[in-house]
Length: 119
Image (cartoon, rainbow, N blue to C red; front, top):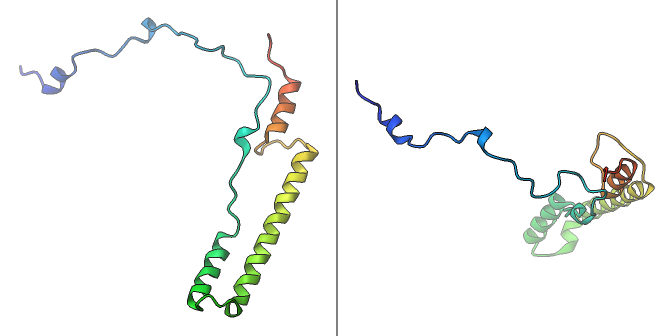
């Protein structure tokens, strides 16, 4: 009987999971607070309207009077973006607890204060 070449290539058997000890590098518990560093988001506002405006300006040899409609569209989009951003910031400062959505670091810290980790 011939031995297949695949069997000959597998020289070492897989490692036994029971023989590998678990070494805890850090304690397996949550901290009592979350930093706000990772919450910064880079919002790109009105990218589509800006590209339309640049295309119009390029076609009109950068004459702004030919692209009035696109300029007003960009200004309107940016105004609505700023309004929604200030509204969201006001809601975040109010500190209302909303479940089922992404929480910012202030809301997470409030939850973690209610349920501290055992020492």
